[in-house]
Length: 226
Image (cartoon, rainbow, N blue to C red; front, side):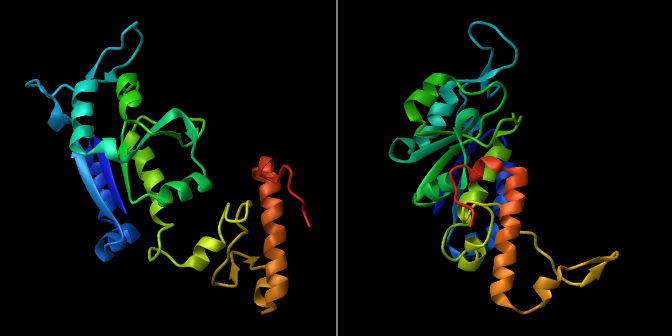
């Protein structure tokens, strides 16, 4: 899968693609990344990429000319273009699976007060929100979206890890423990030391339900709890 990322700060994205599990996925050829600096497509000597909003208001807006030129260079008219924005569709695990089915994604990293709407109208397929909060960096949002997607691809991490994690069955993941058996007087639950796989599975299911009920009760709506 190929990610083409348009940004005013491509060095942020580049560091992400050369670290940890992502670096291994790139090395294996599972993932490729093309970084495009929007500022390279500005036409004035100051490489201006933002301007004041029409109608007044605080902040600046990304100008259409350099961003549209960068999108043209990326061949965006033939690809799925994703723009992280607080005003977009909520990003979920199911949405990540949908995007993971694409061979290539173009992701635009916004800044300031946002992007000129005309560019969104011409190029954007998906406006995506990570949640009900605002980030100053479109790069951070883009990396979160990419991370949720690429880990779903074959060969990045094991299938078993994907099957037993939050949202894989509509619930939050159960608590995890590792050695030592006792840490600061807190013991690992005895059931996890029993070796009884059926009982462990039942305990984990119960813990997932309890955690989901406490933190994300809306996920249980319409669900039969057995």
